[in-house]
Amino acid sequence: MLRDLSVLATHVLENPFLRIAVIPQAGGKIASCFDLQTRREWLWTNSRLPVQAPIYGASYVRAHDSGGFDECFPAVAEGPYPVDPWHGVGIPDHGELWGLPWECEVEGRTLRMGVDGVRFPYRFERELELAEDAPELRLRYRVQNRAPFAFPFIWSSHPLLSIRPGMRLLIPDGTPMKVYGGSDPAVGDRGASFEWPMLAGQDLGLLPGPEAGYAVKIFGDAPARGWVGLHDPETATTLRMEYDLAEIPQLGLWLNMGGWTPFEGEPAYYNLGLEPCIGAGDDLELAMRQFGSYGCLPAKGELTWNLTLRLVSETLA
Image (cartoon, rainbow, N blue to C red; front, side, top):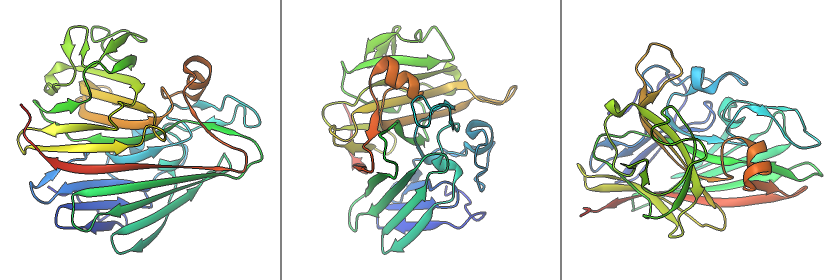
């Protein structure tokens, strides 16, 4: 079912395979990725938090975690920026971008979007192009540094996917991963290293139902084949996220199998964050000091990268 997006102005891109809904005023959110062939919505909707105009600096998880696909920059974790000349300047929860209205130009099946940083001197741009005759959405990113100083950062795609038991998370077996955090120590202690998909005797690639009751955040280097995916056996369809390793070298996973919600006494969420990213971990200081994995905009320079969402019809053995 398509969600009601009538509250804020929404731009829709459509071809015979996909309908994509984007809300520029809500931080550039991709609010819907609807498969017109199988009638399946791939993005999760938060029934607790409706889409609304964001309030800059508010708590993302308590006020604006409405679902869909957001962008996190210049970090994910809230906290002080770790290096000069912005040392101590506060990074908002899940970064700045979700809390700002984006500019948007529409041309056919292409949206060109952009937004300026508030506390930091950058320009973040994203172009979305829906293929004419294929189930494929191409995202092209460009970030400019307007300061005469290098600007370290973390960027993470942040799509929250709608899941059901029996779906399969497609990452090559043996991919090295590390537990970053979680709600259930039995799934894996913080900092534990493992090879995908087996962690503490569990096959994380085969998704359980919400009764599993755990949530875990995992990071690793992006798989060398250049894509990861989520397979739905009910529709024999895989949602692939494709990238160039030279541009997007890390992968984050947020597996919330009924294990976490920010609201005490309410049912935990059941969703999946499949997140190709630049930088290891959510916290920029840890990424720089401990992991040594982060992006860096050169002084007065820019960086570009690309990410493609593609639906593939296939039946897995």
